[in-house]
Length: 296
View 1 (cartoon, rainbow, N blue to C red):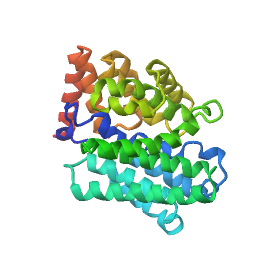
View 2: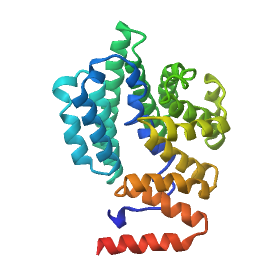
View 3: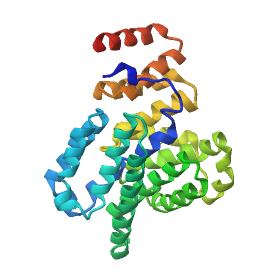
View 4: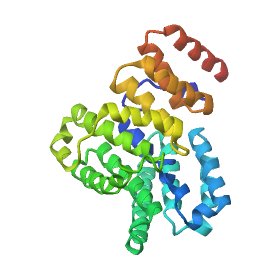
């Protein structure tokens, strides 16, 4: 843990930047347990993905990338490889000053993910695996363009993602992983245009959301989903802290994240901000002193 990497800047840990990950690592695997595919039947590949996931959330980018590279010989032409590589690079880029070359590489990887996924869908429109990799790729591209103030490109990618996301709206009972994506959609569809009025004119492209229902669905995802629990906890922490201004409701989710990934300093940032916002300076100072002690 590096204390000097912590920052309380709301922009540094904004929901836009988190969105490079929101379908990132775990949502890519949404519903794959129910699909028949060579990837699912490959226990070695699944174990590799789980191990890489842990290293990514633990801010161990080199270990994560080494594991992902072992997928290339067998899955180099499968969307799983460029997608997970793009997600790993996104985490790596968060851990240092933004590198334009890495950002460009991330875009290329997500574009490649979309291309490979859509080639699979041309052969089989019901390929659930390809649907979710395409959803993840276009969602990440949309947020990349939103971060770069390229509004029209962002909306174009969001519309593509939405077409894939609609598949999951009615499947939450059958596939618990859908609670995550559906909950995010319901919440941010209502809240995002309120906070970022620039996007209000484009909201009519998308069906209405329900913020209260979205929060409830995200809560279900923290309990029932297999692959999306970390993301669901992260987003609920972020929502309660930044959007709803109820830091006491964010803290249980932050505690879960830190208990699982004690080396992820972005989660410590949320912890500090939540306690400061909740007027618990003692908790914040105790953590700061602890981290200073580890650095010395």
